[in-house]
Figure 1 (tube, one colour):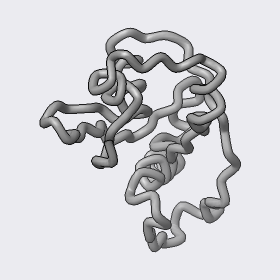
Figure 2 (cartoon, rainbow, N blue to C red):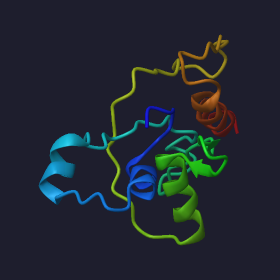
Figure 3 (cartoon, rainbow, N blue to C red):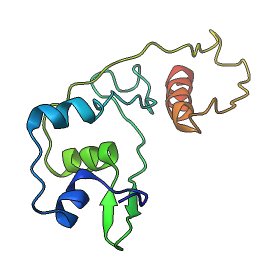
Figure 4 (cartoon, rainbow, N blue to C red):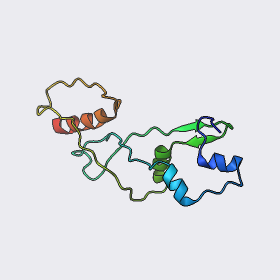
Length: 128
């Protein structure tokens, strides 16, 4: 039972007679925390929309079957079945220079290139 990626669903398959009370499950399993994603769009260019870049995660567990990442599978499902989604917005420390002529040196601070998509959209719009 100590194999990597073994979840409650897998344990119940191995031990079908196991009966867990809901209060035990709620005490032992951690709360799913909000995940922060970097916005990949400019609010000036897309004032009513928010674009994100999400890598869809799939991994293989001990028995060879596939599992999907919790958050990325949720987003994929929202693409296929659109609905409202509650979002937690975290303030950004990114500041664009006031002049569109100021060169930008873009270094991914752990977020990769995603925030720079919005920067390029904004800069292009301000230059036009």
